[in-house]
Length: 91
Image (cartoon, rainbow, N blue to C red):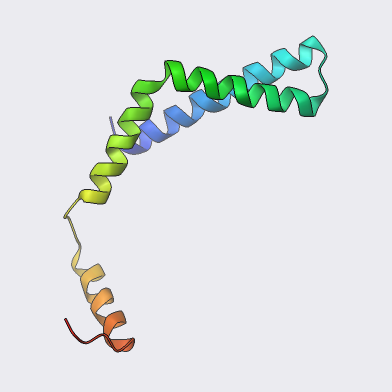
């Protein structure tokens, strides 16, 4: 699965949990701001406990993306020009 799809699905899970919890709190009759706080805590707890696999997959994607050695030539040229313009010609 693509990392962008993982991000979207995980975000939709979290937003859906919040919306369901918020609706439930509003149906109980809580004030909207209390319902929002309680729904946030409930959605966080449920996603932390039950959605650990998608969260870990996202963390792996982020780690892999940060550790990737794939560089494009444009970025290297731009970095060299920036270093030269700032007086960092040591490279």
